[in-house]
Length: 255
Image (tube, rainbow, N blue to C red; front, side, top):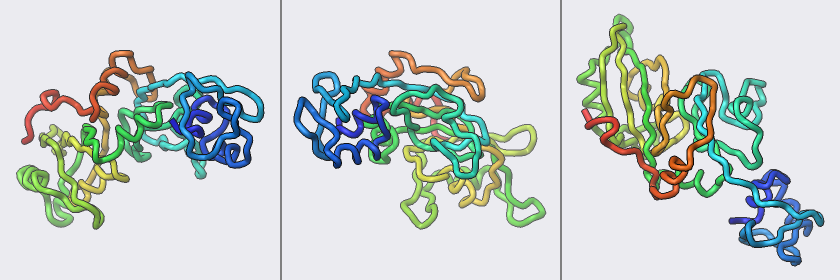
C-alpha cells in the first residue's frame, strides 16, 4: 500500500498530513528517508514518523444503519450530525460510498482504502439494492405516472443529468395500501443522489429512499442508528468475490 495510507491507517495523521510529512523528509522506511509514492508493507517494513515507529493498523469493517438527517462526512460545516457520531473513532475509518442526508439504510465503513475503490467504482459493477417509496406526480397537479408506465421506463436506459444513462440490473414495482408505489431498484453505481435523480427524471415524487444492501452485505435486523462489526465470513465474501455482487436470486427476477 502507499506509505501515506499506511500512516493514516495507523492513526498518526490524516492522509493529506502524511503526504506533507513525507514531502518534508520526516518519514523513514527501513532507515531511509521516504519519498511520495513509495509502497510499503506495514507488517514487514519499519516505518518511522519523526523518529517514532508506527504500528500497522488493523483493518476494520463496520455496517451502520444510517438514519435520515445524518450527513456522510467527517465534519459538516452546517453543524449537522454526521455518521461518524454514531460509530467508534477508529484510525483510518472512512465510508464506502455516500447516502444523502434524506436517505436511510446500510452504510459500510472501513479502514481498507483499496476495498473502498473496489466497492464504489462503476467498472466493478457492485450491486446496491434500494427500496424507494414514490407517488404518482400530480393527480390533479399535472401528468400522473401509472405503474405500467413506471415499469416501461425502468426497463430502458435512463438519462440523468446529461451524463451516461443509468441501466438498472433489476427492479420491482409494487402498489402500497396507501396508494403509493414501492420500487426495489438494483444499481451497480453510486453517482451523487443517483436514485433520487433517477426517480425525479421519471416524474416521480420521492417519499423516502432506503438502502437494503451493498454488495453481499445486507442491513438485516440492525436497528436505526446502530452499528456492528462485519463477521469474518462477511469480510471473506467481500475479499473473495472480486466484484462483491449481490446474488440475483435474493431479490427475484426483473419485472
